Length: 549
Image (cartoon, rainbow, N blue to C red; front, side):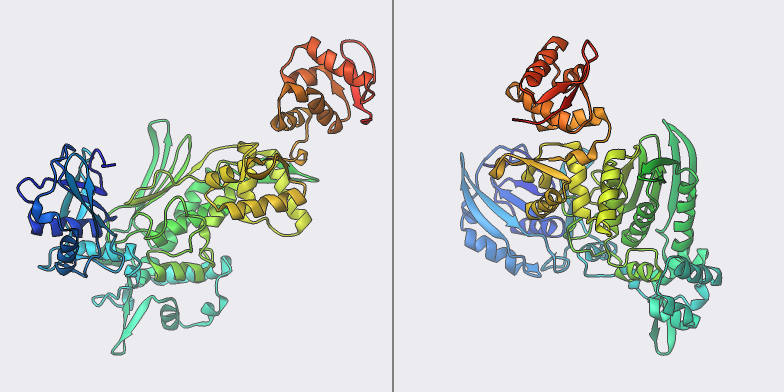
């Protein structure tokens, strides 16, 4: 089937008057330098199929032409599609080994116009660093600044760095080093001909403000507070990254309300936004942003929740779908490594796990990266109250195991809370992890008594166990998850009776959504069968589980 319209990865070209080979090569290069895609020769811009000219009917010759006219040679796949007229399809892979160019030296890329239509535009040398860093072929933060010197480092920021190492349990051995050796150890300088030259990372972390503005002019941050459409706070500033993270964190912390929840014999104060998750999100925003692009790290708090966004999309191989499963790697490895060694960032590189864990531990909606684009990563953490039942379940299980639950376990339990009676496939799709991983978590959770299963094979579904439910209303909710088929009414009543001391007619009405008369009839029958016994009589009679014969 031929596509109906153009997009960032689809392009139509008319071949009525023979589409020029030079323009064909440029179109292929533009695809390779963006996301790859399909070039259709023989289709008009409006989607009308008019056919390919004889000069382009030899698909082998077209593929060879592209390889011979591009640097490095682009290995396209060509095929002829029979429609009203034959159409030549050229499938172009994304260039992952560097920047593609025509043999004459032209570099192009694709972009979308304001109206959503695609176009090919020049790719200027200033854009090369962004492209290479996206492909993990360049660490911009490691770039040495030959016009700078260590005099551009602020002693106050160096002292702040040392205090952070102590406060956040960073590498204590760094504290024993002289300042010059500390700079070398963290990659803040590069030595050439016995002269130390600061790197971008060094200036960003401990540089003076005027040095940051001179050598890293794209670095900036803003903290915003909005109530409805009214802006209550809009604090825009340029400071070294360590000071910036502290300032943003403190600005949010004074607005981070807490709620107390019971955990067994103790009461736990739970902040609205998990503190460790917030710190990891801030660190990620600065360590993974694209410093070749203008823009600010934006932290915005509104009625709905918290947004932390930074310029620069996900690097090659990372997407919203595989964010929590992909091997961690960033756009600025030197900068990220320094933040880890200082103690601000997760040392394993799995800071995103901490961000998800902060919500999952208390049954809150998971962090949302859906607003991210090819040029921006945007994290949204929704305002919500903790789910006391799921928080209690997780806390008790972690106490039993004497270790934290894995992130996969937390995600599965939270997914079952929101979508009971889900299959393995449905859970895997919801939380973006493999079915094998989901099945492993479910099997372990069933053995631990956290989850119950119904059905067999691919139709097997899962729900949280009665351990989650403490009050009578919650137990009714649990039993209703299992099934509501009328043929199973007696079984559901018995299940509820087993999980509580006494059962009333009102409980059955709420459980089965039946009339009081129907509820009384069902209870009476179970009493006659000897499964239940009536503790007292009348309209407010209570019933107790006896046992099944």
